[in-house]
Length: 207
Image (cartoon, rainbow, N blue to C red; front, top):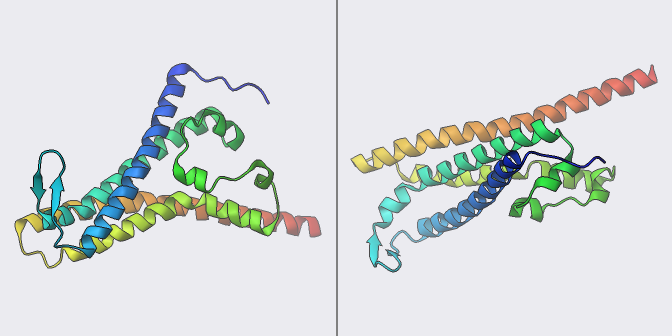
């Protein structure tokens, strides 16, 4: 395999986007746990440490759909930008892509595929590759589902504040859901294409 050479500024951008993607995944995890716990205990008191500033729990909950959906949008933007640069320079060579990934995120490490399984035709290996391929849209879909429950809690809209938060939450949720849906569509479209191609090749061989 030829040595991979990438211009320093391009490599720096890719690594910066990789770090941003990893960072916002953790932000999403922390925010999801926070809003899940806050929704379970709406009467809890919230205080900003060091400055002893108390926050209105209802206001924080009402902002939840916007916050979660916005984090998903940022994560999708970072992932899309990173993938675009990576594919332009390297193509679809996963082995080479691994060389420039200076800061893999926790999803990539939790579902990491060893080299010996990447070309295996076994059932478990194929299942593991399928799960690995869909990990990001699946994770972000769960986050948007939580944002949906938080949006539902805003109804009925009784105050101007709730209307503002509901409008912001719905707008960002729709944008985020559209991008995640596109990820699902791309993956299933590719599976359908390769499945049809395989059937055509099988029929051609039989003929």
